[in-house]
Amino acid sequence: MLYTFLAVLVLVAIAFLALGINILFFKKPFPETEISRNKEMHKRGIRCAKGEEMRIFRAQQKRKQSFQQVTLDTERLQVEK
Image (cartoon, rainbow, N blue to C red; front, side, top):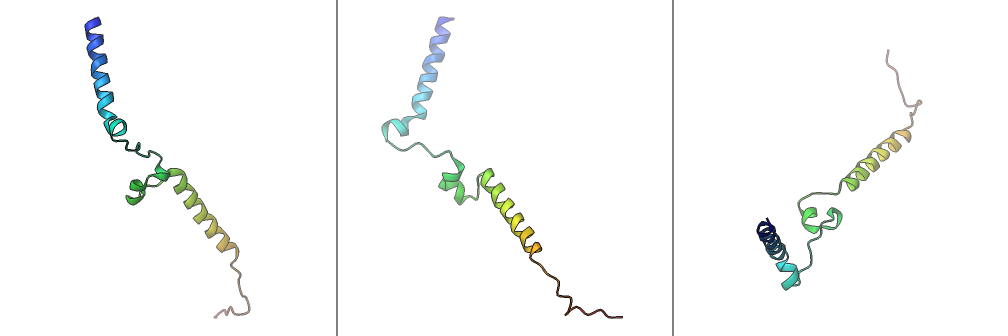
């Protein structure tokens, strides 16, 4: 049981080090995981869900306001019989 635990612990430690090689040895920055700040996701057209919702909400509000500003010019309206 102890032998199995130590073997698993060593394997996890090796995997942990292998995943962190770029960060630990080459001093590369950790990749940005926030969607709104990740340039690669922006290039692929992936946007933040919150930002998308706000964009859609603003577009709907603009549409509602444009309908509220419509006036009917009754003098120019002609009714044909």
